[in-house]
Length: 405
Image (tube, rainbow, N blue to C red; front, side):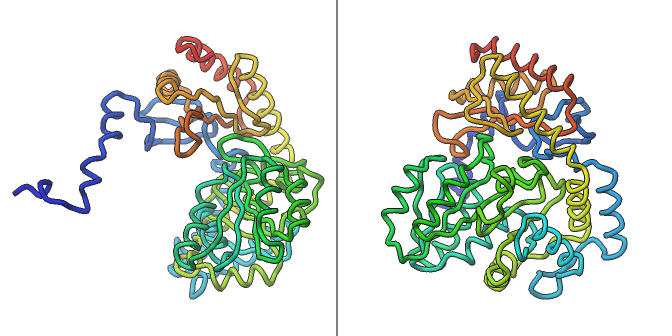
């Protein structure tokens, strides 16, 4: 008897045909192998394309100073720490970077994880215990939700509450429904990864103080992006680090590396260090990535013009798309969504742009709410005005052909 004729744990795999069907039509947009990357250009199947969908916001991933720092660290420490931070995987480089990061974001202490995803997974798991309340924006990143689900699944009775995106009236309604003396944590993105808008942090801080809640701020798409000097959402709203209690960020965006960190009061970070399972049971961030991140931090501090250029490009892109007739939602950052709604039209426009050498990202539910399918575009500090104008021209032409604008 054929193994597929029997009930099996693998039945769901055999039944999953959506990806194969999309590949057959040429509309499958995922897992495209990039053969080479050179600043704003990438090469796929030997063909040059303009990258307008990267999170390499400051263009540092290809900076020769980053490569040199990574090479020197690998020469001194090797290619891996071969252990977790808890055991043999902590280098003096880890602690040097953590000290510099804490100073950069105005906190007492910081702790590095191997990825940004693990930072949210581990920090939220550590912070949430039975009976605690966690309040999230409905557009919060999946890694935030997974950290909460990990805590719920292992500790039980973690109380999850959601409020409407950036809606302070709804947030207050949720907070008001929770007993004042019960522990609670508000978790929000500083810059939302698909919409490109900014959390209303001062208003959230005021509500948190009123209802005795802590604030956990995910700055993955904010550090190096917003604020006069790229210090993120707190700087954007007046350079007040007290606007959040815990601040998280990844190194895979503006920092051009891989990894992540959580920063806050020293005692709180020390607690997370001893209770975050993804930190304790994962190999630590490799030496080359630590050194590259440290170099990126130095560049961000000493070259604020990169941040200013990124913000200039963001404005140019938003205004350009709006002038073409696109709905860009409430974006005010280098993340500029082209809201389309219809999944088929979203994939068709993606394919046409791909064929014309413009790389963007199609996003559909569950990454965004149903009927809110979009193309996620994002610019970098190293994009020239001419490159952005050419991308706008091509995207406008193809969208008109499909009746999107």
